[in-house]
Length: 212
Image 1: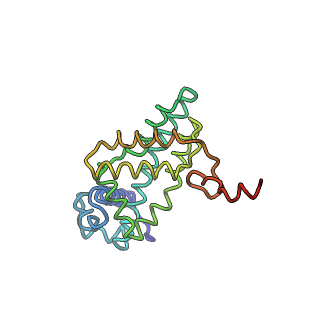
Image 2: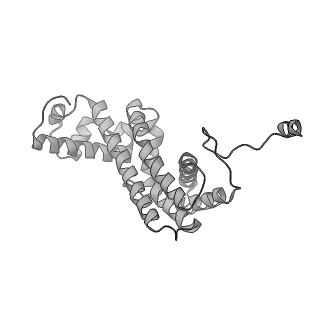
C-alpha cells in the first residue's frame, strides 16, 4: 500500500494478513477472500479497502507470511542440529530433517493441499519461490552437520514425496519419510556436479572403452 498508515492501521493490516495466511493454510487460495479474512480478524469487511488494493495483494502477503514461518521453523531446527555437532549421527540428522519439514503451524494435509494448489496461482507461487532459499539453506545446514552430500533440493523432494504418499495412503508420514531418508542416505556416495540436484549418472561403457 502506498498510503501512510497509523500504528493502529498497521496493526489491523497485520491481523488481516495473519487471518489470510491461516485461511490459505487450511483451505487453499480459494478460501482467501477480503470478507473471510476480515471476519476471521474480527474487523469490518469494508475496512479492507484501506489496507489492500485488492485480493491479490492480500494473498501475496499471506503467502509470504506462511513461507517465512516455515523457513523460521527449519532455521531453528538447523541451529539445534549445529549446536549438537559433532555428536549428531545419521539417526539424529534424519530426525532433524523430518522435524524441519513436518513441523508446520497448519495440519500437514492442509499444508500440502496449499502447496499443490499454489501452482495454479501465480501470486502465491511467486511468493513461495522468493522465500524458498531460506528453507533450502536450513536443510543444507542440517545435511552438512552429518556430512551428507545430497543437495537440499533433492532431500526436500524426497521428504515432500514421502509425505504426500503417506497422506494419500493413510500411512504415518513420519515413519514413511524416515524409511525413505534411510534408503537415500545408504546409497553410494556421489560427487554432485555444478548443476546437479541428484546422484551423478554412472559412466557410460562406451566412454570407458574409448579410454582403454
